[in-house]
Length: 95
Image (cartoon, rainbow, N blue to C red; front, side, top):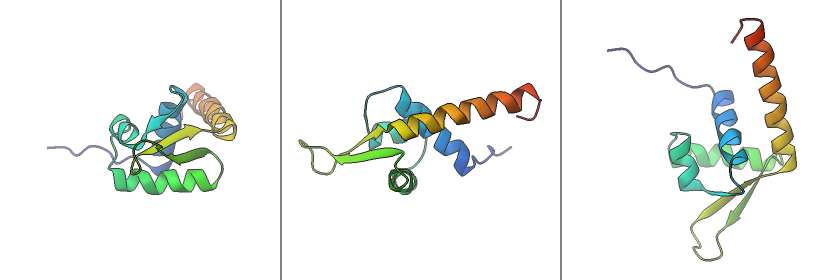
């Protein structure tokens, strides 16, 4: 039985940014399911991206434990650059 190839941190970050770009905001559990990543692993990535100004993490006003995530303009710009880079790599047959 073959094992699935492990995703790199960069691949996960791109998937997170892509998912967030499709919605105004997402709950952490929704995002975790979308990117198929455990909540604990996702949370550390979200905190890192938030510290870099790419995401906004907020606690839900209704549900204290619920974490709401939003993409910042800087996060959106980074995603656009990553999309361009991916296209360039594909054009040269490197991706």
